[in-house]
Length: 562
Image 1 (cartoon, helix red, strand yellow):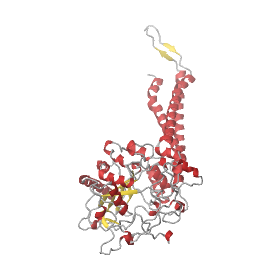
Image 2: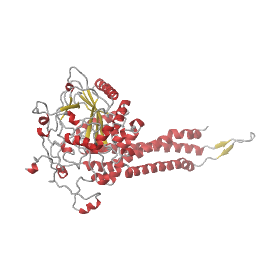
Image 3: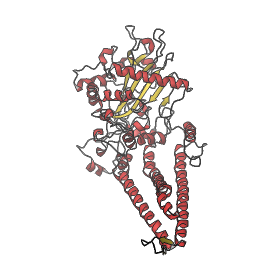
Image 4: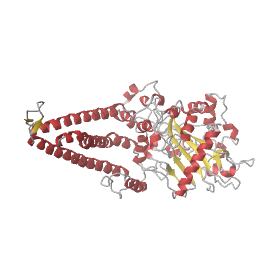
């Protein structure tokens, strides 16, 4: 076998495959560049709010969206002193389940997880806690979300691929009929999942204090048409004593807009008891000398689905945080039922998290894509995207396999500017790599074609008495055309597939379709300067609340009424 024959044999592996691999990466990075500067930039800008009023996150721009008065609660608002009033019985109707939640702001349910699953999940968490301590309070970036500042509390984002027991726990949650009935009664069918995490309070941890997980200034308490109603489920993974820090709840305060409810919730009641009660583990200190154990909880947060076609533009609350790794976003309650059958495999979850795909089981709302969460957080410098956290992100990229020339300026304090530079640098880098690979490919083929054109080819004769026949090789130009024509056709085919795929994503993928149709820029209360908008509203015509129109509850102490 001659040089040319050997080259033809090895060319697919040494030249063609690397060239096409580089070309595919080139297309992907350029597609990301177009997407970031196009629809993703629009998504980020749709979440931007100006006119920050104070450190609590109040925005004057939200004033026209207020739907409930700023209700300041006191001791009379405590709805019950008996935890049994929150208990959901198996024979409750949906109306009864909803009534308990609406009256008290919380419900108590039994047997969400089996005893065996609870014990095994807790054992898994204890192993992760040991790893956390041995690694000097360090765990992977997509697992550890919060360590309490001193390691006394650990919030971990978990996924079914971490350990089989996590998949089993999610499976049991999805198949718990009583839980599904209660969620359906409160937030509607198949709510979206916006948090899957665990919270462990280490033995010896101090008191956390009375607080709300969703602040009034960024939730449906004041802005019912702006923010989704969210409900968090805390599942204790062990028997919990009072000294271990069982949860102190404050029933009836879910309509309150107090900045601090400590005085309201912890004031002794007339009969000597406190206006709080213990239902599960959360909040207080964990210092039981007789049970020196860490206190672990399994946490899931659900929000109601949205009907975009009918103008529902509600978004997840701004007054809270969501401890969930990015690959777990985009899921809904029904998806939990498929976790043991591969319905929540990592590839499927990635497609959902980035708003590219939804399964029939996800229903109309299709879950909450991570890109929505990312855009909301980054546009307003919220949790995980504060300027002070950018340096840590840069250091994490430095430890990755990314080329150093791609990384942005580490001194930047603006996330959008940094990510823009990151994407632009990636385009410049892949352009250089692709041109280099293409140049090497061309030079090698040029040398081989020149060698082939200048070397006479011999063809053996069937007749032993006759000499070998000498044939003339194709010209240099014919050789080059023969080499590069298939290359050009292959590039056009790959590029065509990429363009069609990109076009499909922009027009059919759930999130990008909403961006393209302008749904993301809709406001909770559209400006009705042009009343013809009523012609586009589905259903019966209703009133449009004004800034001074408020919903009045059973009390009449609102400032507007004084």
